[in-house]
Picture 1 (tube, rainbow, N blue to C red):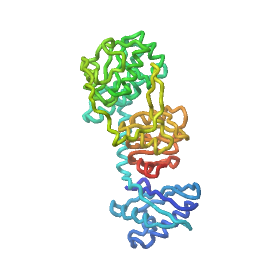
Picture 2: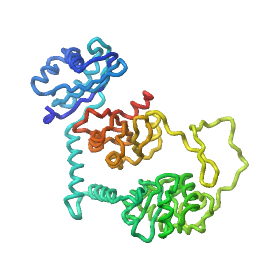
Picture 3: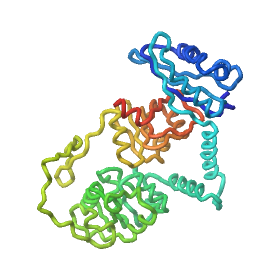
Picture 4: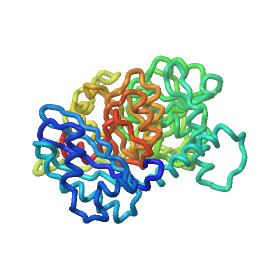
Length: 422
């Protein structure tokens, strides 16, 4: 039936007690019988092959049961929607009170088309040696994926393929920045991966002409200050105020690098965007001080923070890492960076990256992640590699159209997690 089905009804079921698959199937047939009339009777629809078998995955924990129900439908959209809605009338499963909620109705044909597009992009990257295609969108997608595959490592740090043999390098903050520059054809960038400059980068800066290219925020200011103290840099470029290198357009990146300024013209304290004037090649004075002091009538609640020493002996504060799944989900979604995060069973962060890096992060994970958080769409390709690497749970902003869904991976939306506080 799955080969000829047009739609898949996906529903979630919960029961206040321990129930089994046979109890769920019996409740579906028993409590929908006669509800929709003879033409939409579930048993008759199965006998005529208009509806496939009822697939149920159910598990129990702490005296409660939860699981999923999947029904393949060869009916039209309206009839399939009615059939799905009828499942939500189920109130009991076996001796237990229960509730069924339809999560989504998936168009199987759309999922197959999506799979065709993904496979076509793979074939385009491996079966053709250059060439001009008529679809600008496909060309750009394939070109971008090839650039991502070019990323290498230099002594454990993300880097472009030309870092080792180039006379000049660009030092950026992280892997996403290296990928962005690769996308624009810049292959000599290396990421420091955090707020502490690795010894490998410090040594490398003594051998090459170095341009520091950081985000236009406080984090970029502090990183530049540290790099100035422990490494040898020749030029400085900064993203515009409150913008990140990974989010810049090609024109903005090229403009920032073209208008870089000599490092010795930058003051030794952390030079923010106020001084670098968005890399326009000239310094500008900081805003004049005002006599106004912050009002005490409307205090602002700050997130819990931990004091962290800086290289010069001062202290700064960093937010305390989340301790719950919902805390991690909120942090990833609120960042507006379209990011992904891998967590272990104790909700400790294993790795962070962009949505485009989800597949690569899962494939290269040193240990099997317990959970994957995606601030974007979960695709079939990422779902498959998650199942292969042992991920038990995925929290996603949006579910794509799946041709198949592994039973070993529990998929929930951001809204479901944040509302439950789990």
